[in-house]
Length: 192
Image (cartoon, rainbow, N blue to C red; front, side, top):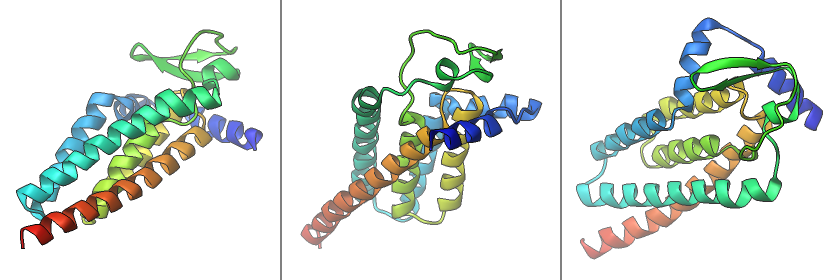
């Protein structure tokens, strides 16, 4: 299983292209990711009242923060998986706005790899928003796929890290969608 993960990593990480070298780091930029989801959340106003919109956004923010916390502070330390550039040789790694090729593993202190918080957060936000408003779903899904791809291309995650993050994000989005839907139902019944 781990060999499959490593083989897939090399396939993606070693597929080099100058255009991808320029574009994919953008999809790992937290400010860009946050701005995208903030803009996408405004689309909910097309379908929902201001009160409903604020409730949905509240649940999205709380869910996002809980997913990020559980990923970074609970799951990553529990699994303790090292990042590719620390764990295996021959890795293209992006840091300080440039790519470097590491022939040998870079034994240095870094955060852990599994699951990917970028993948879990973007998956959570994409699924959560699409559960409430399905029209932009293809854009949302494509976006979180690009975020995951960028993390492998930049040499900071293995494919199974991304898959684990996507699963965490999806499950969390579904739970928060159900909770938020119950609250919306109660609020709408009370105001009917």
